[in-house]
Length: 417
Image 1: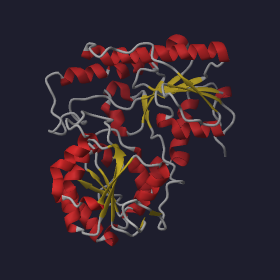
Image 2 (image 1 turned 120 degrees about the horizontal axis):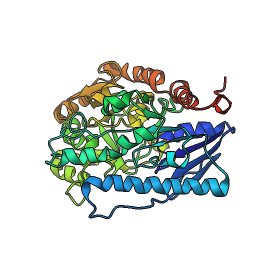
Image 3 (image 1 turned 180 degrees about the vertical axis):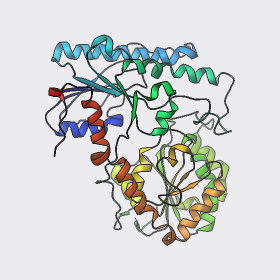
Image 4 (image 1 turned 45 degrees about the horizontal axis):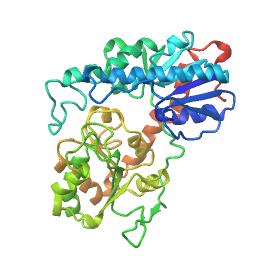
């Protein structure tokens, strides 16, 4: 069967699914992306497309996102048409992300080809990150700008044959009229590869001895150190954590860019802003900013962690939360609706008020002080993730079933026994 994946940043949410399909060696798979150096996946033909148009910096704000989306969408179908003409590839099904407009015009190119679109988030004035944190105030124009951003999913719900959201909370962000067309299933976590390891250890450049499982290690991770992922609240909790636990070390994973929300006005970014705020109340010799680390090192860091902090506003759930649960980390997370979908307080993790760094510090200190009292959380978290989010046993069969429901019998994907 011929399958076309479309995502501006290959492989995006489709990493596990694409690799599994390619490993079957029975499908011809193409992947359209804007990524200049897409990763090489055996059995997958990556093709780069260019947006046909990009809005100018001074473009009208209420139509800028739609202009960018149509430019991406038209560029994607131009590239797809060229692939069909020059390489003889026409997909039996298209799977892609709707967020950047890449799927918008595929029905005009191939009306008979079914499409499954990834609906990640619908912008709202309340119930998400907007109006959640007073440090990121809204303006009188915010409601209109948010709705303008929704032009892309509003259009693409009519383009796709089936929609997909990875969590119920994300699906429920969309208007109720869309829900019946969107199925809920996570991308999937490879729990068979993400395991606890009592023998884990890691060398840090600043100290002589490697850190290891059993040490008093606190971890925090985000793609980038930003307000959306509660970095500012984490930093405000550090003075109390380090004062109460003089042997604790804190390992921070994340870049200094901005993935979501507004940039810090500080020239050094939010990290520099927060370092200045907490100042000499923190023993910086015990805080290690590691940047964005290789995946193998990230696993070791979580396996060593005595307490892992996951802070987020109400927004798209990070893969890292489920991955750390799979590795049996003892997690302290923000008590917001998308997190509560995955973590139950006192059973699979611990939840605290996002807006209360003192409460965060108090809970972390308790975990560091009495790890035996919280030792049941990690194994329970892993058990829950295996049941609800495991790629091979839970998510893969659901995704394949949804794809097969749109395909004729002779084109359906066969799951191995």
